[in-house]
Length: 524
Image 1 (cartoon, rainbow, N blue to C red):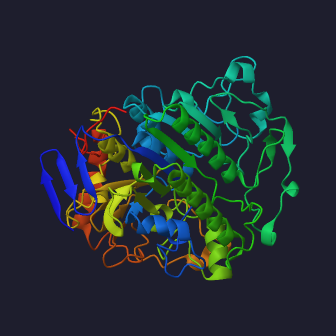
Image 2: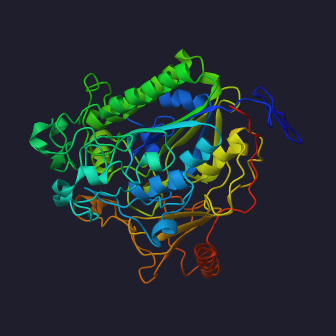
Image 3: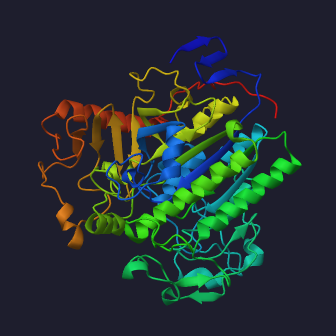
């Protein structure tokens, strides 16, 4: 592939020119999956127990990142990272919980530039459909903010609480149809449409009313309060339909304006609740069928863009919020010889690689050369600066402070031997830090940072080579399984990474200053 870089004109052989200030802005779609591990897609895992043909197609037609990471090992803090371009400690000062019940307020505080804000300022019409889960402010009859947990759900005063002061429509989205928490796991079980609640939670959800595929895959479906008519089964198809309606209506009413749509899925979060027609489509049990259901939803997104004639004008990103759930990893290994962690140590909540190394795929026909596989170290937080680069937005210095521009990598014009990121931060379930520098990884804590590895998980415990060490240091080039702690043997490198971590925490940013967009802006 030949690349020519002349001033503001970028030409990638076979991909066509991208000229600053002269071309129409692309439409942008993000499909943000839930608890999809590195090994859950067949394009990432040659030993997968099933195939994900549409995601494999998307990867073959674009770029697949093999060293991509969620900013946290649980969902709510990672979603904050997607929408803000920042680590959760920028909002909380520490880690961040996953919200349940009427939990909040939003991690996205007033004054935080969000992804929706940024793209709307560049002329986009913005929408989000699916799981929100970054916290919301709910009030009781006295106007007092309610805390989390399930018991407080019946105390919500909907007249006082809505329109929600920190819902998606106050955080950069023109249209929204979302659930406050995990759609089939954590009550409140209700829909929020453009900041309003069309049907209130007034019925008690009982787990026995749902199917338990295989006798165990209903695990982690919490009982609590739900809105009458709330849909547990096939909910991602509902979210897709609402996104489809948004896109089709927008194309009819505003054909010259670009759109930005986020489809935030439930799959493959527990519980496994299969839509009609999904059961038995793979030979890998209910969860294999469940991931294939996600693949089908992704395929419908691609087919929609093609049917509207905007396929080549749309940048599509696929990413996951953390590694695969614990029991999902265990059961898939035991029952189907399938490893959702893709050979990496750990799983959801853990600071080891399996907790935060996730799939990340980008597709933009005619712009992103097909068939690329990149080992660039990247984070979900980088989506912010990358999209800013796509639309020609020069980010303020106080915005998206943990976001690096990956567009040069996507376009195939960056030297693959040069890392865009000099370092990468992640945070585990308890908010503890992990930092990467090249192949070196330092965990600022003992153990997993998340799971306890007792009972059925004892079989996954590795011998601790330095039990007295307060932290962990690994060289992923020679020890990708994080088996040999070099905390004492490589003390100089450990002290270097400890100092770098402290510097980054105190500096208020990890991304470079004076970020300049690669592509120019164009009037929609």
